[in-house]
Image 1 (tube, rainbow, N blue to C red):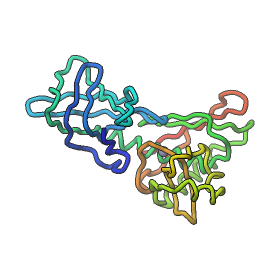
Image 2: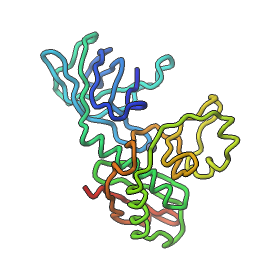
Image 3: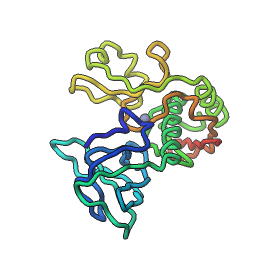
Image 4: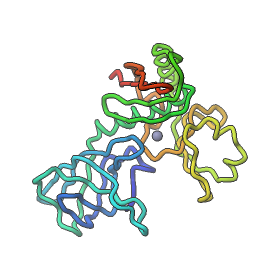
Length: 242
Ligand SMILES: [Zn+2]
């Protein structure tokens, strides 16, 4: 299974071949559909073939396959006709929804950089997204966070996937200090999502989600509310303004 969205998050269509198809899910040789994971919802859209089409209502990870890595299941709408195994199909994302996920997901990375505290949870949504922080009392100011987020967005900083070696990471403990999630090492290299440049770093995290290429593409955001979810746990809820 070739996962096109990792290197090419802006690809909204692709040609693929069907491995198998049942009401429980459609397996393909390659996909642009992001499967639910890392707090980002699975993609929706359509699979089309000569003489047929099937709406896809969700995308999830199937059983992990030892030889093929991530297994992606495209969930068909109930009662729809399914493509035959072996036939070529055209994949098409609900791009408006996915692009909102990319904008919101990138916003949450900026929120990590703005709020000084360990992240304990989070969820990306097309309308609203949230991150939970382990911070005390009333230390978070809604207006301040919103202003800082919009300043970083307007700065139009580059967002890149970068790969560094375990040795490079070990030689730069300052990089790890900015991360709320420690990268897994031992494979020789670590894949990270970087916002800003290497000498002017805004956020650096191990992350497998989809993001916009520059922060300016997010557009203005609003901090809707900051909720008290128990001692040392504050939930910051953000929304896109347009
Ligand atoms: Zn991410």
